[in-house]
Image (cartoon, rainbow, N blue to C red; front, side, top):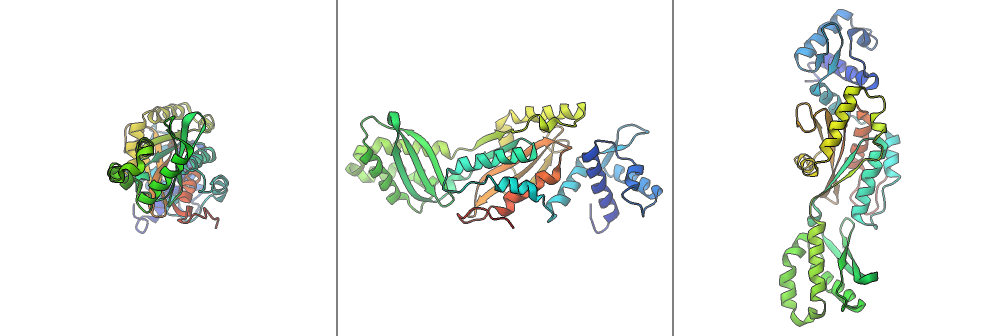
Length: 343
């Protein structure tokens, strides 16, 4: 719908959807008259009839009111995403738990997802991807108890960590030396480059690395696992999501929970739009979402897209709250290691 040519219709859609989200009551011309006092009842009825024929609303019963369709929800959500008005209380809740990047990058992302789920009452889906494009700055291998070791890869956006198996014959000095050797070979290179060239570098080194050759192979295996696309779902307030819902909406919410059980499907849907803020509604975009909605955003640090974060829920939710949280991710995660600043 063009806002310039159809501003009145556009305004009616926004008000009608907002009322429906707040009250769960079908939309009538009488309820709209309370908001548009300068427009006659007859004009509002005509506009609603026109909007219904355009696919923005559907009538539940011949004599009853109307409810929004996917098209109306998209019009409403697009207006929120294009607005500068944000719910700063929600954003502060997210900022309060945004950790310093000196901690594990994956832990930071996971914590951020949990915080968003708690702030919005929606399940949050974190899809990790793009870590292979991070640039290596330093590599450390730290022996732990019971002959395991902690692999720390410092990158241009944060630290990636993982546990690796340690040969019983490997001593602490060899671990330190292996980390220094790998740093020397791959500093300034991407993780993907390191994985692709690890074997060749090891072969060329020959006797120089013979004492920790197996250790380097374990590092390669760990990194291959780290960069795999992974899906992590946080659902901090599952019961609050159902508060105030009708039985029909509860059934739709159950469909959403069933949808989230198929991680591969969730990953595929999010990755289709991994590079931009995106809104989907199951009614007409993906049958597996059914009565649900998904709003997703990329997490980009220092110009590198490292993950996508999505909030999933039923159609009738507080979109302003959800949009504020996701717009925060898109606009407020800055590119330097200083973290996030409030406006």
